[in-house]
Every structure is written in structure tokens, then in C-alpha cells.
Image 1 (cartoon, rainbow, N blue to C red):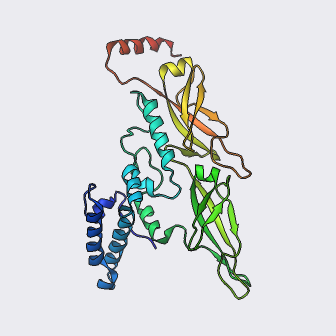
Image 2 (cartoon, rainbow, N blue to C red):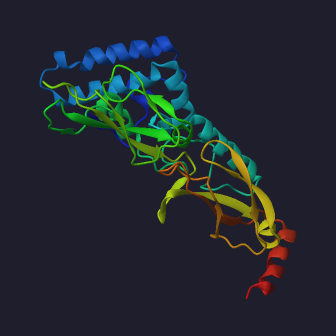
Image 3 (cartoon, one colour):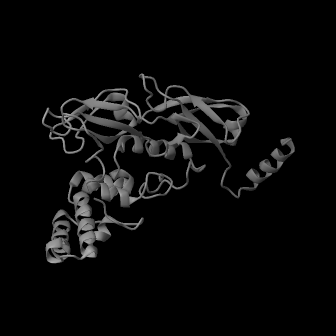
Length: 312
């Protein structure tokens, strides 16, 4: 099942409460709306049914202290599968430090929710819909003499894929351990956890998808490589410098920018990308963005004019 929402949906607006509302206010608002739009009280009314799902999905987040805190900090991105809050905070911290008054990759870092500089992960529509079984449940079935094999998908953060993680796929009552080093597209077989049949149960296959964290994007030229924007000053680009670069598993590394580097040039950090089949990792490409000072200082403008003579 899934629900239909506006791309700019705000969970607090759905429940009609302020962002400062306490738990009791949120619960009271939810109960009133759930009663108003409950399908049993509105038989055959599709609009009420969709509204009931929307209200219930909003309460599933705002009624849970931990989920609400994540939503308040990161917006809709914080609700998606495979989201790594530590990696997001690490990237934001790095971006603010590297900006140093010179601007930052992607623009304003004041807010991390929605489809702003951290966007590209889909809007709140799909995320809320997944709260009602649109994500891990169900799966394709193939007919066998025994019960059918079933397949479901899990979305992991880069760190979860590297370190391994326990997940609860589909309607499985227990947890399944995903081993360290899995890659996008790999299938984990769980014997005897498929559909029940006369000759015994089939198997469950868990298909893995690894999601890049906020601030990183897939390299279209290599499926296991990631790309991140790296702001540098004119002096750093001209003279060369050692700069800090965030990694997708919430760390940082030092990178040497060569003298004479150009904006748009990509520098490769080997083994810092997505996990690959076989245990290795792809690379991280740092795309240089040469930033100019934002100032009306006459001295800065004079220096800029002097530099003009050196352009070929």
C-alpha cells in the first residue's frame, strides 16, 4: 500500500500541530483526526481512506521520540531506509568547517531536510508510503514443489554494508544478519524462510541496495564509485594544499590538491567508495570547486584584476 502526498508535505502540518507540540498534544491531535477519517466511519470514501493513512503515517514518526528527533534534524531524508545520521552530521560538520566564509558545496547548510542541497533521495511521499508496507514486505514468488522462494529488498547505509548489520526483512518474525562487505545487487539466501508448501518452506532471498549518504552521489561512470564536491580557495588551487575530505562512513581523510588544480577537476581517493562484490571498495572522487571570495574589499578587487593578465 502507499499514500499520496504533496512533495512539500510537513508531518506537523498533517496533524495540525506546532513543531513545539509535546507528546500529549500530538497524540490528542492524531486521535481526533484518526477518528474523523477512519475508513469504518467513511465507507467507500477514498479521500478519507488516503487521509487516514497520511495521518497514521505522520503519527508513526512524530509519536515516536527517536523518529521525531531524526525528522526534526534532517527532515524527510532522515526517514528513508539506509539513512546514516552520523554520516550526515559528519558531512554537515565538514562542510561548515571547510566553508570558512568561502561558501560550501551545494549552497546553504542551515537546514538538512527536504530536497535542498542534500536532496536527491526522493520526497516525503515515498518515505511515508513505505511506513505502510511499501518497502520490505512482499516479494516475487516462483513456483516449486516446496513452498515458493520469496525475495525482498533492504536498503543499507555505506557503514552498515561495510560493517554488517541485523535487519528485519518483510514479515519475518526474527532478525537476519547481513554479513560485512555486501554490495548493491547482492542477494542473501535465508533457507526455509520463504512461503510454506506441501514439501516444506521455500527460501527467502534478501536483495541488498547500498544508499549513498547525504552530500555524496553515485558516479555515473562507475557504479561502485562515489563523488563529493570539495570547495578550495584560489590559493589552494594555484599553489597546492592538503585538505580534509569526508568519507561516506562518517570519517575524514587528507587529500593533496596539486598546484595548478582547476575547478571541476576530480581527484581520486582509492578504496573510499561503495562496497564491491568480493570485499573491495570503489573509489571516492573529490570534485574541486574553486571558490572566489565574497567581498567588496577594494584590495581583493585589485588583486583579481592583477590575476587577469595570467590567464592564457
